[in-house]
Length: 495
Image 1: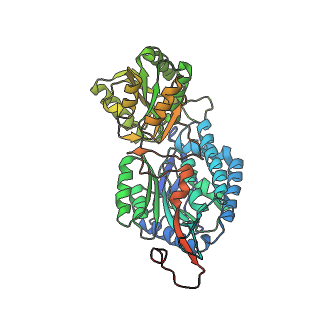
Image 2: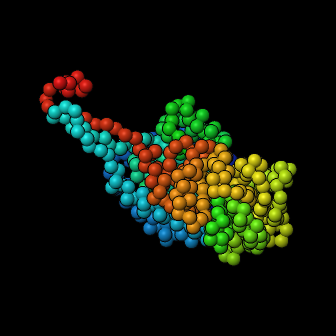
Image 3: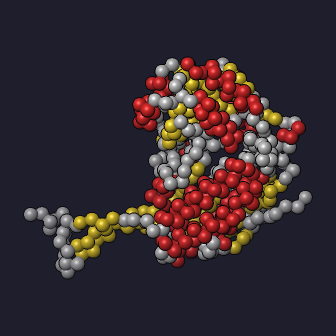
């Protein structure tokens, strides 16, 4: 069997891992389809990549921000031209259907054009000084070499959320793609190179989190880390980064609730719940993993939702008629199966699904049925992230009870409310403990020009989207005294 061999990108050169070891990238819908071979890197490769980024930073930080932004404009144009090929590559390595992978590439396109505009909007402030003949201002400065650790579920969109604002801010980067989906990061970075990015400004080191991720987080020349992944790993990253005082941006797990009130447009709520629950095979941090149903509509909604879940077509995402692709690997299947058993043991009622699919068109991949349980709020399936096509239905009496149940978990990423009552909609916007709230829309669908991130165990306060520039730049206060004499602030200004 022949397949492409890919290397790390270090200082503008494509190099194998120092160890010579490789990892196969396999299509989760068809394990006979090998996407390619990628380096299984280690600390030596990270050291080389960080050294290259540090060397490139000396010149890159001096490139005017509008000129850095022009590279992003060209990148966006090239991504538009390559969208279909990159989407097909992504479906092969990640599994989600083509309509979704096209959307993933489109998000990178949108991010390129949006962040390019920031090249002329890296605004600081001017402010009056307390002393005569003294000018005061603040300016944004690049952080330096930044480490980016990206997930497999949005293998081009999320890297673009990190790379593009880091670059326009004047930083150089070392990015570790997810082990399951490195090709999409390679495609994205190759596009940046083709758009004119200088050597060493972005470097790719592929490999495991233990070997590459830890080395990147702990490296003394890496000035900041941006991480997207599970809350468990995010906590590990934050603790290791703290030893060298690195700022860390963490975007982690979710257990997102869609609340459906008695007065909701049920057809709209059903459409949103189905898309939010089973889009990307439930493998989104923003997936609708809890559906909270007011009792007046609970039975009707449940019956229709279960029928629609059963009717979803499952298979290889390269088939345009397929609605739900595979889970990304065997481990994710095992997690879904584990939570099915946990829910049964806790007393949840299985309404449909619950099994891995191992025959017919699904025989060569990692597929799991769309699964629906009726549970109560204290059960583990109602509280813990599954990251698979397993959704919990929970009934409640009053609007206030629905908000209380939605807020009762450790996560706080996305939330949704379906209602025609404007007063309750605004109360939910105020009271839901989440970084994102949708009214009459599903829990998925973030746009690049708004802040993206969550509260509680979901994030540590930083935001991606329009908040990323704040993480990838640092402030410098500047004073220019043109009085030609010594002036002492807080002393000479006292009457």
